[in-house]
Image: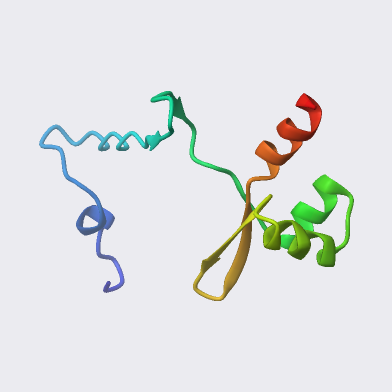
Length: 90
């Protein structure tokens, strides 16, 4: 984009000049309920939340208790809240 160009090319334009509304995000789950998108944490956040080592995070990923999500060169962890909920439930 050239200097001074507007961001209008990056988003939908409304004739009345108002900002476009964000599209709703839905995730399908087996029982048909709607959930918020999973929160992604970096390794240091995951370690702080679970109070464990990086190696333990990798073990939890290997055992399918957590998910590793790669976005370009960034590794992020999904499933912390679900793991904690399962552990608290029993």
